[in-house]
Image (tube, rainbow, N blue to C red):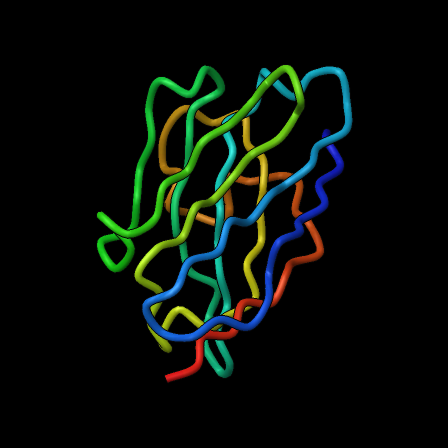
Length: 124
């Protein structure tokens, strides 16, 4: 397993941008696909984006496609979520997670390690 710590959350106006980072520890980081999820007030945790271990493949929720970009730097053991054109409905706690699965990245159940989350608040 890897240990994950998110950072980069904050308060931003609608239309603004934020970049979230997820720092991983552990020697096997490059073996894991990585995902971002979010959980808004009173809502279930939902899939946002995921990226393969090599960075060669990625997947996005329809609600963020074209606005968010996931990337990773295996040498630095970092995963990023660049969020542009933010909307109030993007307000949530954002979590990164790791998985050895090569598919079903949209499912929280395939992830075996989670960070503590970082709050993103988008004001209208």
